[in-house]
Length: 68
Length: 250
Ligand SMILES: Cc1ncc(C[n+]2csc(CCOP(=O)(O)OP(=O)(O)O)c2C)c(N)n1
Ligand code: SF4
Ligand code: SF4
Ligand code: SF4
Image (cartoon, rainbow over all chains, first blue to last red; front, side, top):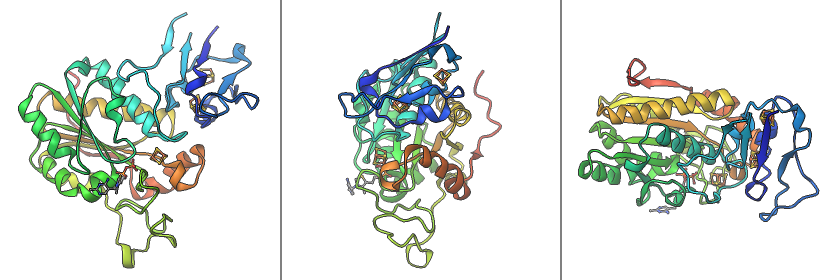
């Protein structure tokens, strides 16, 4: 099963990853603030991830790693 | 399970200081990935501009040199002539390259310097908080064109690729954007080609990347990508302006 890993402390909550995810499974964690003061992105329904890495390709801050 | 995407080794493991969603970050990743994939990182010297990316010498995992505003092509010329085997690139914004540094880029291209320029056009002065640039679109509101850029008093946008493509020394000139996965892949291909042109000693190469400045455009990062597609590409069409038929991969 594909997996995406978010390095939360580097995320700036810009939502670019959300805009390109074909499965629409990325969300900003409104209940979490990272050390930069942003709501970091994450995935709850990891079983729906297809490992396309679109999120990682567009992330300007290299937050995301993808395993498949 | 295998890693299908990881942070490139061409960037040092430090956070960028750029605003959320600023596509300077994507362009940095692409340049770094290409240098790693071509095995050029250890022999590369980059030249940092003045602008938001003034300190990207702290980000790229190769040798870097800072230049005075707009002078990166002149500094890169000196480095390349002293170290002809090095891969030398400049990373410049549109204020840096198309305003204060117009003379330097035009003459580096005209001389056919064997350097590569990554020209990041966000149609505004980002670092100094959003003044009009030579590349600002007609009608675009900036802090120094509060009613929108008016050609009668502020002139017309400069299309850098089209202008430089008239010079014989500029052998490869392409404009790309990074607003979609497809666009990012095409941009990476163009950057790869630009470095290969240099490696083969063919002459000057430049890739213009249409980029965003969500902070000074007053748009969200996602809206900013859409504005590049809807407004910027009308003034700055994507495409190859010189060197479409250059074969460099072999
Ligand atoms: C000699 C000199 N003149 C003016 C400035 C002020 N200045 C700093 S950055 C900049 C423009 C930056 O715009 P751009 O090159 O488009 O880069 P961006 O910040 O948008 O990435 C200006 C005018 C300066 N630092 N030095
Ligand atoms: S790898 Fe693809 S499907 Fe999985 S979270 Fe990223 S964009 Fe969505
Ligand atoms: S693209 Fe990167 S920085 Fe932006 S929200 Fe997604 S993970 Fe965070
Ligand atoms: S001011 Fe604009 S160009 Fe500079 S880092 Fe912020 S969004 Fe990017």
